[in-house]
Length: 173
Image (cartoon, rainbow, N blue to C red; front, side, top):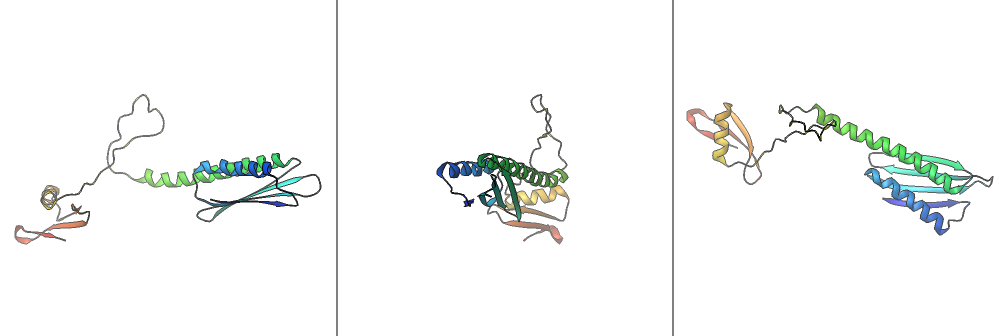
């Protein structure tokens, strides 16, 4: 993540820079692909300070937060809280969208029995694993299935297809 801190009509001292950098550390916890984050701190000469966050996230999502306050540190804090709220909502939205696709999958397997510890909303399912097969195992699986062809991965990791041919022979692609 590229970060920048700019002072407009304001001299950036080391304590201000350190405080602003700690704000950038606080937004990293959402595990978003943040490309860049910048902070513009300004003094409008009327007794108010302004803190503006511009956070660029992967997939064209940009968060722009501007906060004004009489105290510079308070303006940074308020802008940071608003930015964290916005990023949290975006992270939840991404997580919800990714989970919808998983919820729609129905692999026909029964969920594992729920224990007393797992009384939350998470149901564990056993994944269907596809192990590499040799040609004899694939031939046996084809015969058991009663289908005309069977798709499998061979020992080398290549996808192969075995088919039933006329005369009791098998074709391998």
